[in-house]
Length: 350
Ligand code: GLV
Ligand code: MG
Image 1 (cartoon, rainbow, N blue to C red):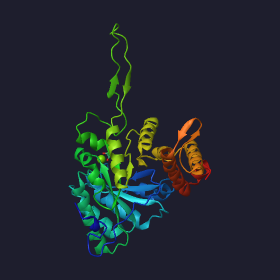
Image 2 (cartoon, rainbow, N blue to C red):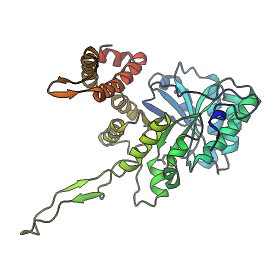
Image 3 (cartoon, helix red, strand yellow):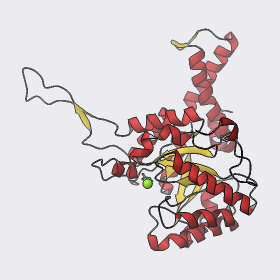
Image 4 (cartoon, protein in one colour):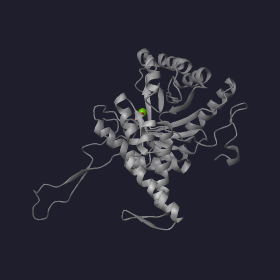
């Protein structure tokens, strides 16, 4: 374990100071685009008006013979596109791949002051984060970067889940973690062929009726991902970083996507990936707190605020210091989103 006094010292002479806090800003959807696709690159400025984060994907879904093209396309976007105040992230290739080293060295040297966060896939343990941390520090120093690049890990291996608490706390660069159900399913040897969402075979069934064994028995589909998401949310919040649901692969199933995103939001996630323009509106709807909940949270804050603390009843429901804190979480998110999103500002009456 590193000496806590050293944790906030740069890992290379001349590298920028590591971040002391994770900047909290709206990241409701991390919108993936293929930077090797010229048509997609041309649409980047327009996409930037719709989303909170734009991510140039270099990893899975980019074929091996298009990896270099994708990296060069992302550098072009970073150097030339007008993205307003939208954050530009990238998903680099994994540490053991033939592309990782060139991804990091070229992106830092040619676009390191424009790419805010590097998403690292297939993270197994804190050692993976520490390796990237050190490499980034050396490259930042070499190229005179003023701002440290942040790291976002994907939780998508069985070993990564076992080590998730240590991964979250491995570096002050850690911004957050995304849940990666497709790779995680493979790594765990789950018997699925999907990217997130439920599975009709994962059910519990009511007991047989004693005097009528042939009677139909109710089943309820269970959530395959609850354990991992809950553990990830705790690990992230314990380390002061942000948890995200990742991809939902069935693009046509908007209802399924919305339900999956909402379950993650209610559990504590702050955003999800959008893999298709149709998922942008879903993420925006889900990860902006509902206006009626925000209105109720405001009433709780006012009521408890006026009484100092103690207990008040609102609509027959007990409110105390703990519900005040929940209301504050809701209100803080709403205010942060309202500051960026005029439509939500109006909906919240802020
Ligand atoms: C995402 O990368 C996943 O594997 O689900
Ligand atoms: Mg993956």
